[in-house]
Image (cartoon, rainbow, N blue to C red; front, side):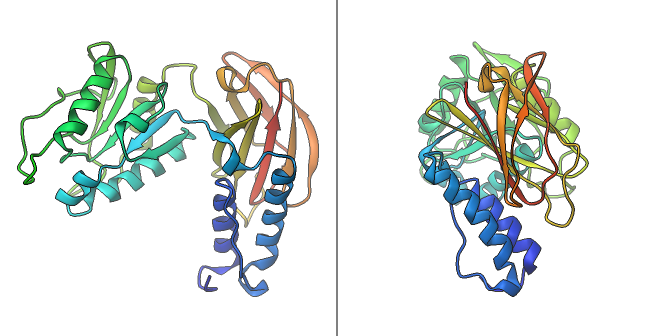
Length: 293
């Protein structure tokens, strides 16, 4: 990597990559090599204990559909919207993954359509069938289908509100498009309301109360839940409260906290309604919390 992003930028990239089990290499010390090395040590420690992210199963609350067909007929607008959808959901700590086929979305996950105005007829049919069978669907912009020549057809889903509209056994939630011709980003409060409508109250896998932005990625392997935490490099995350849904964390009451800065401590987990909560030790950049029943 070129040193252009600066040490802090490279460290953050390395921390985000570590949540997926990917290591950065070839980093000069002046470009952040020391910070990357610390993050790499945490990743290798996880692998040595059989807890590597690449060998684990990600917790997926919302599957964002990327359609090559829609991307073709929208001249790349759909791909940009998929990226923005993932960013919006990650900012709310929703555990989201990108799928290239409707059938690859986990059965218990909501399906998100990001400016999917040109789906193939087969994709549109699968989305409608999944929705009517009871799976929630979050639509940024009005979904649409096209024929083999890219000509738009009739809408295959009804108009929906941000609070949710019943369609068959499922719930359809509608939001403005993510790549509008005019206007800015969607208000976080509106996306949060929509996420609550599709995920259900008290069913969030993770939540964070912090003075600094924190990225949370959850994986599960051999009964152990791994919570990957990515924070800023320029200031420590202090007094951060982490919430984990009981349906994800189970009955664990203690967890092990390991950070790239060298912390290795056990911390308590406290029941809090439908979730477990804990105040995390201060950390910079990257840390991992592991819970076992």
